[in-house]
Image: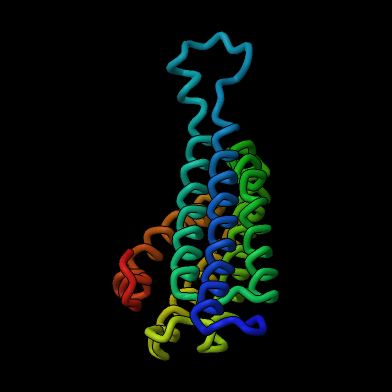
Length: 221
């Protein structure tokens, strides 16, 4: 709080800090998702009928869809955290930046997966893809645990049992991503399938555990 400012003014400063982080991060997520679609294009110079050219795009389309689901669910998790966080201090900003760094690499890992998933290098491509997701999930976990380590960083309506539920959901998600990474060297296809299922798991876990921010705050969604 700056000297001479009232408690209400300090509260507005805190809100402005978290809102700016959320606004910047939302734009970042949107740009990354947009970059994914750049590789969705027909091969140049192909003489095949259009329908067959479209069929040949299936690895790229599948990689795009899986990446979209995972990036979107990371955005949902980030959005939920921003709704219940009350302050964005320096450590918060750096941890948030590391999460965005992991997200920024996803267009590259997606293109790598699309180009090599049906060839001999499929295990390496799948390992890079799942490894990037695992690192992003790790930074999300660390960001949450930093926020949750001090109750003052959370809205008063977020109670201890809420923090424990969120921590469990995040930890299980991270562990499953790590399993997918380990499996990628042996079963690339199944490792990518696991990452797809994680998006569904996280969405369902939101409701089953009461993690969704509207379930643990008095704010309107």
